[in-house]
Length: 210
Image 1 (cartoon, rainbow, N blue to C red):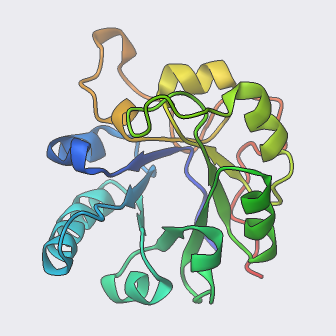
Image 2 (cartoon, rainbow, N blue to C red):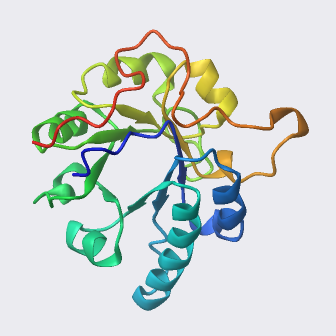
């Protein structure tokens, strides 16, 4: 793991539906934000080519670049870390950040045991990805997040307004960070400042590697 890396507060997550807006969104994010590249729908060579192009833009802005894939592929492609279900993060690879997905207490427990560096817990609010699916809501989100041994990033229907309503320092979004910005909403919350919250999760650096 990169011991000097600070966990960003804001994370842009790629998806087929925000593909055309990713470059502009990366430019608009506060410096030092996070970017999770998924794009599972693309064939291997095309996926790699787009990842490298977006990584160049992200690195120019000082963003942390995470690949949704294995640790081996993450290292080969030059990512800062990987994003996957808890079991898929193992075996760990030195020099990479390991971000786990979680939707319930069982997956939080797996992420704890398998040494994830952070957890993306979802869905907090209703999403376009899974219309009609059951959501955690703020109360259950907080209850589950309290069981995590590592920082938790809120995901699912999130945008800046939703993050402020949740009073949570770290959040990720697909649509919420690629929509055209409203005139009154210029300047997202800085990625190193986070939100003023009453939470042990606030503004912690990456935990030591296990």
